[in-house]
Image 1: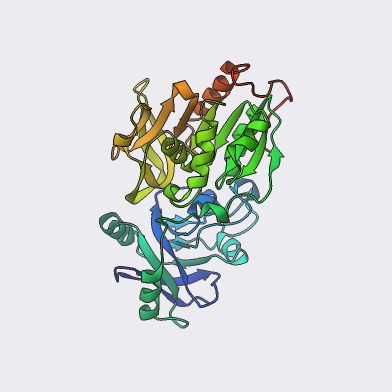
Image 2: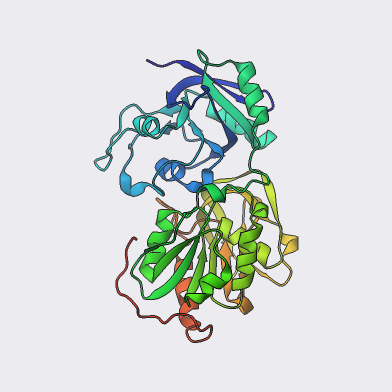
Length: 378
């Protein structure tokens, strides 16, 4: 049996639906509302730590049709505050699935609202921008309480959400021939899978200082994705500044933003962000257009990148999607080359990281290659 529910935005817009999933104490879910345009990969989105603090509205009308499969998770649990869908599938149809999406959400305590006119909702966010939102069953709460909660939602500006998702202690994964230290700002398992094919990876907390990393003599340093505002992570920028020029560096998403700031750039918040699996990006070195996966609410200001090469540009809105600092042996991209389930156009970037480490052997005094064999997930 379902119960009626309301979704209320901070600007007063109201959307009707039905309650699903599980409900936190107080009978409502709150967060910064963003929309995602993927047509598949909903499990990867829900378990991506980069969505910490946010409610995800899926634009594709039918979500949950192939259920949930453990190998598809990007972390051990969902990190978003809730999900909004047009139709939540009641029956899964995939031999790999072990659970319905609705049951999975309920088991992990994630609230959902289904039956929402997500086309109208998406158009509203595109015009008004991402904002605080709250939703809950009408038999527990009302629109006035939801509006007050939506307006009280702090959003992500100035928020260090990384501290809530990073690992508490270092751990290792992968069996590749290089030695890589990966900063966990909210790292996805698919990233570690690709890195693990290249290197033995030591995943470290976001607050790890540069000196501690360099003491381990790595061949390279990887900067992961993560949630929130890069401007709130001064400690991470300080660490990256201490690594620049000392060891090859590759950053993705939040890691790219932090790298850009360490190189003298600045970040700003987009009106409604890039969240989807179908963004066209031009690779300036070749002119090739890549279809890419995105999940970012912040971007790097192009006019702040003096002395840094721009490598990729988003063709939808011109946002800088990649930078290189050859003299510092560092590069990064805003989008997700590791994207699961796809697209896979940009996976060559992991090979570029491998080549950068191989070309730097003996230059930085880092660790030696050949310490392991084989690849695979950590």
